[in-house]
Length: 137
Image (cartoon, rainbow, N blue to C red; front, side, top):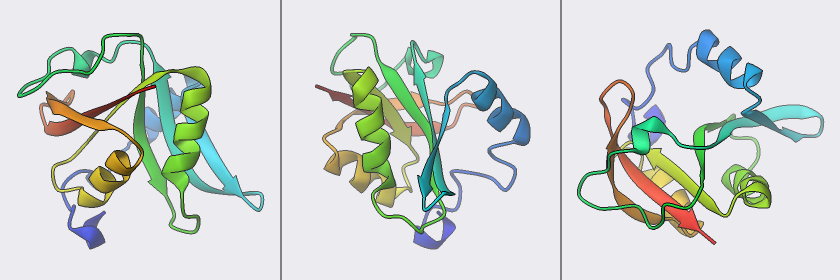
């Protein structure tokens, strides 16, 4: 992210080992494999995300039950990781929400290319501002 102009979204210690273990234990952590190697990961969590309860300068497209994609990351070896995550998510949910840092232009383009609509601004658990998007089938 730093090399593409987004140095502030994730600190050196984020995500923490404890957070990653919590994602795994909850059953919300997924990996993408290529040739039997893990090349990417993402979190797909169904249900209400408390950080999305308040949205500024806009509104959600729909209040139907949704899932949220968090912490999608790749080692760069495989193109189209976001599309893989979306295909999996849409097998289980018809509404997907996601957010990203204002400086993460690469992710904003990927999100919009996959049919998400910009909805407004949310604040993360730590108070940081994020651009919020929703996809509804």
